[in-house]
Amino acid sequence: MQDDLGKLVLRVTLAVLLLFHGTNKILTGLDGVMGLLGNAGLPAWLAYGAYVGEVLAPILVLLGVFSRIGGALIAINMIVALGLAHLGMLLSVGQSGGYAIELQLFYLFGGVAVLLLGSGRFGLNIGGTWN
Image 1 (tube, rainbow, N blue to C red):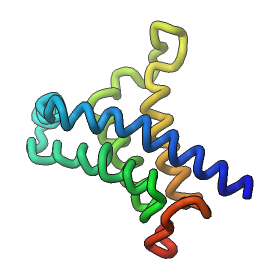
Image 2 (image 1 turned 135 degrees about the vertical axis):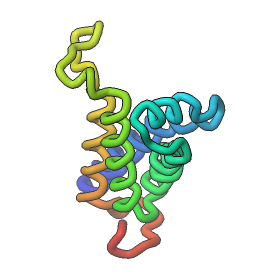
Image 3 (image 1 turned 45 degrees about the horizontal axis):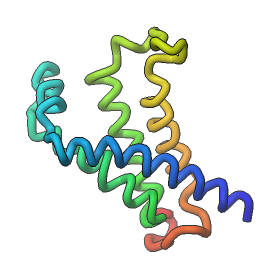
């Protein structure tokens, strides 16, 4: 029971916090992401993947539906974000003294943890072994 509660806390925290980023992209658009992709020589249409990684995947994780797939999508999304926008901060400390990319790494490794752990008992559990 405690393991399942721990998985629930992880899923809800990861999903809700990441959904703020996805909601912001829905409201303001993907111009910033498209610019980063263009600077990297990649096609702008790949920016729509941000909706997959920051809206769809967190919803899957939050509901406990195909949670492992959602976790993998979040991790992939964050690897791309780190490569496009945060690579120069890899060895940096933020203004408050913490690691400059600690939030991005929380999302990355939170996604990996959900991928490995699954949703636990407190989810819709549609998707069999993919939860």
